[in-house]
Image 1 (spheres, rainbow, N blue to C red):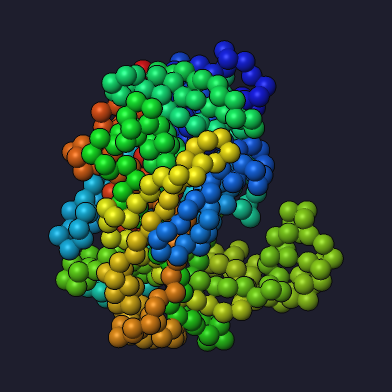
Image 2: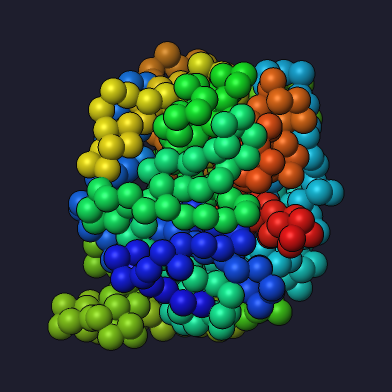
Length: 530
């Protein structure tokens, strides 16, 4: 795979069979899946090999909705590798329920189901750097891990076990996979990546039924033209609708927006701490609901055990999907962080002193990892009970355009992110059930914050998790969404969308595994169309 700068190539390099806009996990997965094929694939990345403030400013937003963790900047990174540059590496599976039409969740229901995604999860796992693509959540985990299932189980009418996997980089075992770092290692003469190449407009034929070219600019605003037979938009849950809306030379309302659906149904995951557990008494709780190290076909991988609302209680009480877990918050002088830095060759004398002064904790940790195959015992500041809840799909929660433009002349997105009381009531009920189950199982019980109690009128201290979702939602009916079940923009023959913007609902799970599985599925579709 060849990496070039837009400024250093001639116009002959701006022609391909398939052009992918964006080099995040979705875009690079599509490219990797098409490596070695007869298709010439061009990947365009707005950023470069390192982040710069000038390029990051292209992702500025105007926030007019609920409070976001980054109120002036869109989620996603303008750098080779996209959002994988800063992601936490946590991967989860959507539930069967997430794909279903739920009468108590307005706007729910995907036009595809678990059976349409599951065949692509194994290949997705290899791209992401996890051990298994499926079969690792619920009670199936124990057989997969070769462990005895705990004798005392969760009450299945209330909560169910849920497991996340943590991505592992193939080179740096202390980090999750950073997609951009591995682009140069892919041997693929048919793939070219252009960095510092920002798409400013998608050009269609006079009928708006087919994309004919892209306008692209580098450090200077001078436009150049990219030609391809097929185009894939993979710039994130805010970037995707922004570019569709801003490409309005033929259709004033933007591409794919005949029914005013582009940018609507903006969702995220609302996350945060709802309680705290004293580290001094937490051993048995962390033994059960902590981290497990499992030998997989792709090496050893870490799994995190949490809990999620059962489908029964969601339906009976009109709740959204929600999960909780114990989050260990290390102290400033936690020795394992110092050990990591030393092993990476980035440590200093301070790290060496911290490691030596906590030799007993390090020895205990090595024993736990090598013999018991569980998480490392950190020196902790606190243990939080954290939650992640799906959002209610809302057409008024949306991305539109402002009158302001970035330095390349592209209108900035206006983000009107809405939250809903159903999300708050779900979190409070889930927190109550988690505390009750910990007590029933004889485990130390987290103390809930006042705002997380069922009868509280205080605000929940939750924020977004940089998972913008739903803004080009998938639908069988063009009047109800932006892309069809194959992720093709309704009414535009050769334009596809990849990423979480196509999700009709979010579930509670981190989206990257599903994003990459759908990208693998889309790559197969593109190959079949060639």
